[in-house]
Length: 421
Ligand SMILES: [Zn+2]
Image 1 (cartoon, rainbow, N blue to C red):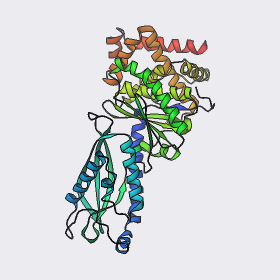
Image 2: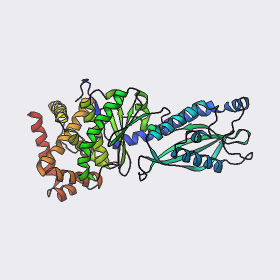
Image 3: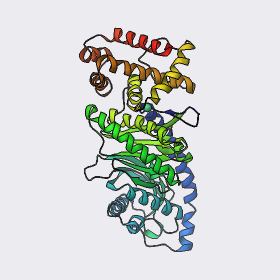
Image 4: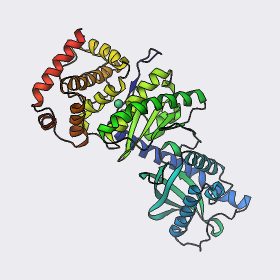
């Protein structure tokens, strides 16, 4: 399934989220400091260039909270009506980089059909020298008027040269639309793909693969709690791969971030999009997370079931099974497996081959449950354990009508048998 020969790995949802948050905080602080240093001498630039009539007037020394809220409200309204000039109004012409970033953001959000966008200030602006800083929560969503709102936080800094409020620094979120560079957006019937890669062939390939992946997953969604309104896929370039949602984990080729009930984003590394077949398998696996998790983070202990079902759904042409079996065979031949089927995520430092084997064992366990009890009951068991946080044994008794430990033992035997076949 991976014609380049290098083993790559689609990656699960839950674990990546913790990583994303911690990395995002560090990045935000670092970039803000850098921008702050760059901005302070700008006061001289205003004086030299003349002050464009941008933000609202403010009496000297007054806290700019209400003025900032007024600017943000106008900016939000401008964005929603597609008014680029209005969106940029509070950013002075002397702040070329800020205007370029804001223009890119406006372009991407408009292409993604932003339908809700509100900016809520957090607390009261704090003053350092002549700069006011303020955190802002954004609530937003795309495509439909009834879309489920998502949250992101950004940091802003403001100055009041000659009595007029102006934005002088902006530290964006780690969301792809806040990247600073406009993304190229393309829609299919069920999927919107936004790409940071300039190559249109990559965007087209991802969209083709994603549409096929959506057909498979929409079918499973009827049993798993409903399909998303629309699937969103973001194609990351090398830089974005390290930044969006805090960056991907080691060995990942793509990852899924649950955002809100019914909504998850999928991020794909542009370097992995090497063939239609592989891209389809990869996206079918990720969309399986979108559909099966329904935008919620899975319990950590249910890693095996979360990844197992994604492999199971992605195995449309048998290639996932073939690859996974190969990894499992080597793993078992090296006596690395103790027979536990309810595996957790690969510990850090796990080799790629061993990580692949754990995905394989997870898949073969889910396959065993489907073969023995039928797909419908396997999916019901998944729902109990992953979505409702029911203990594995209790779920097994209620769905399969038997205790979990003999089922796990039989599943392990079937995996050892498959690996020896
Ligand atoms: Zn996964």
